Image (cartoon, rainbow, N blue to C red; front, side):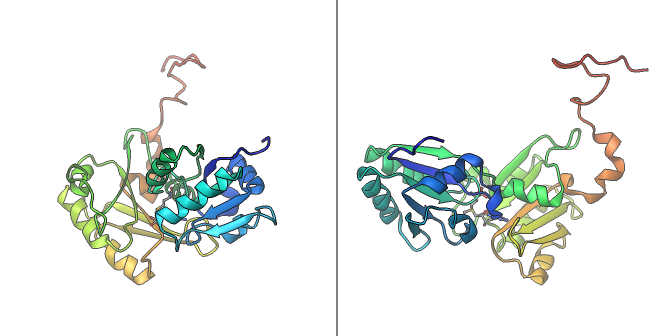
Length: 265
Ligand SMILES: C[S@@+](CC[C@H](N)C(=O)[O-])C[C@H]1O[C@@H](n2cnc3c(N)ncnc32)[C@H](O)[C@@H]1O
């Protein structure tokens, strides 16, 4: 990448493992004049890749206005600012409020995506979240806690679709999660996988079912920083019936733009 511009680069750091930032994101981090990062969720080892003379600031203790003020002041001085967010900035990253204030101040910005914790969690579980013939939809959502969820997006109504559901920010709300999914007609045996601090050295994985989730989470002491993935795509026994869930893409009888299928015998 050539010289950075005087603007704000909103960069996804990935889920924790410092090597899961994108190549572009790392190049920006390594060259930026100013680095502002969410210290509770971004690895110090990653931030250590910034230039030794970079002004590095932690944002967890700052209010929105202070964060934006730092960005505005530095960009107006002709500096590049890397604003490092956990996972992918577009998912529960609270970037909308920062971007709208930057826009108001006519400060240019660019967003560099990152690996979201939902995909890092699926990876460490060895799971595909959209399995042919089983579910082709993934819902990313959260249980309602102190932050309200719009009426039409209550977990119970989303769950009526029986898709895979990924729950962010819900580790302390498992009783509610279980109740809503059961009310939506999910069976008590539905597989649920929880990954706490996916890709960090102290990562924890919990395999459970809807009826045992709350107790299993309590026993495992998982109360924060966890991704809850629920649905039959998380069934570890699915591999025993793998031939029932094959995609068309690699089906030898299926013709598509890159391959002519052979007729079925
Ligand atoms: C404020 S949100 C940020 C999400 C982030 N933008 C992303 O794409 O992963 C924080 C929530 O994301 C999830 N999360 C973030 N990092 C995680 C990780 N390494 N392992 C498991 N869950 C994680 C947890 O549900 C946590 O409560």
